[in-house]
Length: 128
Image 1: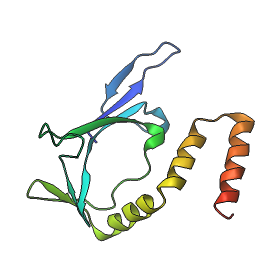
Image 2: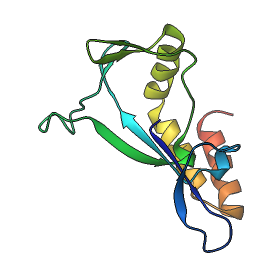
Image 3: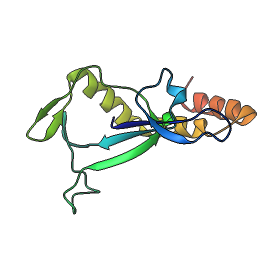
């Protein structure tokens, strides 16, 4: 994580960088450096999107895109990042079930009865 952004108080509050938040719902956007999987548990800072420029890749994500955090600090070796075995398992599950993650993300954009109906459809499609 590089930066946190939060909307200020009031209806017309402005979005601004903040040092910390007490609740994930208070986050508007989070700035991250993006890494691309290179081999098993090794991730590189220059992604296929930025390789032509030889630069790192950064992105702002809304709070609804935050799924989890690493259970252990990654190791930096030769400018690459190596994650621990437990975190690799989590990554593999998310990567394997990317369609389910995408379906869940769509639910975040729905409201009221549409949300309940979509949640039920997703549950049925997942076998539960």
